[in-house]
Image (cartoon, rainbow, N blue to C red; front, top):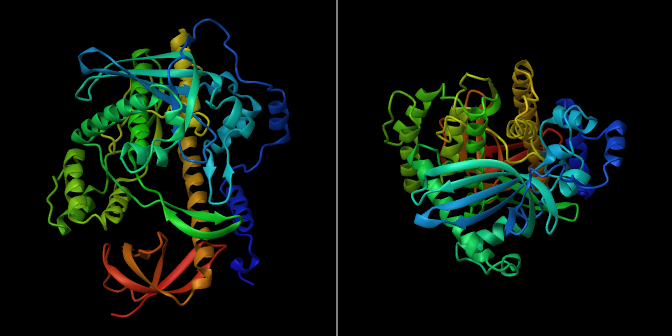
Length: 492
């Protein structure tokens, strides 16, 4: 009997995911000690003093995935004189409940991130917290850390500040419906229509986000586009695989979070505090990026230059949009993955090559990422005039640990995603598909199907093929447990 014959694909994937979590040193469950501690938490954090501003009357809203329940941030905008706009990003004050060295904090430290597999989400914090008591839920008053940024008409940051506040989410919105509306492809979402002034405010936020994005890319931030796909379930059965698409709502949140994370790093530096930076180093394989550009008729500088690379990416996307996601993936592999680095007092850390910034942290998702919770504790101490809650050697160890565990979590997600794709394709062995080569090296040749956003290995007929070439392939084998999908070249 095949995995498809069983009829409960979700159950199969959940079992594989739990095993993969344990094999990679991640905890799929909360311990009795952690659950006992959770039982003693009976409500959201209350204001301990008068330091938090009351900003509940502002028309805050959240924009996230359709099914998201762990709401980390809210946004709102305020037009100012001279064409400037004040952008406020409120981040859930998770530290107000999850204290350092508590049992729940120890679990968060172990995994360092929520793990989003195809069949189950393994939350970094218990759902009672992440989707309720520490979440910025609709029509609920919550403590937050607010990043305030005044943006000039040309997208330049004029000033910034960080402070604590009480906020209230007046509209829980979703990326796709808001994106369609902003792009003129769909109606105004009901959640927007129900709040006076929110439509105008979101359009103002969108305009500022577009200016921030344009300025970032002019400074060399890379506009990369990869295909991220997820399975579509009908009950417990996988019926399809769909690719995520960018839209203006996702870009709005992305651009605001990038700005907020930059402001956070600079704030801690201004207070002579250490910080945990998110960095992407200058590519060691720049020579291969030069070759990739040269193969397409574009000349790059001999020394790594993010502005020149962004110009190449813009040119390549306009010339061949179909193959651009695969080119993006190749460039990403040559640049390398991000990592966490402790920046100690008086020292400097590598910047973020992909974003073309020298000062960058992770601070806007403390329900989902442990580095953001660490940064929140540093921020709150700096704001209150206290000493750092982390010693230097402690931060150095945390940076290394968070990088390692994040890598393990991503491996779990990729592995279960491949198993889900294998389940979907299992009954289609012998069928032929149009495909494009996405990887060609000594380790093997990989192809992505054009009809379904699914990738597999080309085990026969790969001689002479290179990235970007189109071909017909035949599906010859799947292995759900190992996440293998094997093809052979069909025809000439």
